[in-house]
Length: 111
Image (tube, rainbow, N blue to C red):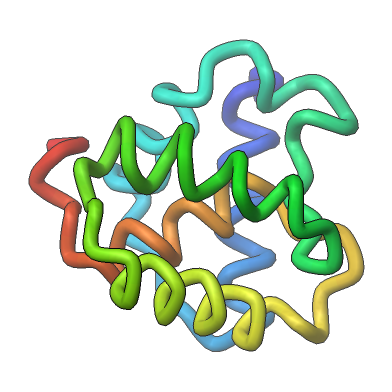
């Protein structure tokens, strides 16, 4: 199994733990869009307790990649993702972004 496949499998497992059934093709596309950062320990994780990190997720992913600019939608999506992933100590960025893409209905950007 390649490193990429391992990351995708771990992300799918993490999503399963929070009750989300992942579409593997979409999950793979989101992982691919993250580039080599998915292999770097710090860059591959999201911290909901770090406001600066959530601002980066908002600016670099939700606004720039997904094109969502409605502040209330962004806030609701981030709060929902953090609540959903609360039981997970180390939130994988790929899984977290998958949840955001589904929540914001932006799957078409990755197909």
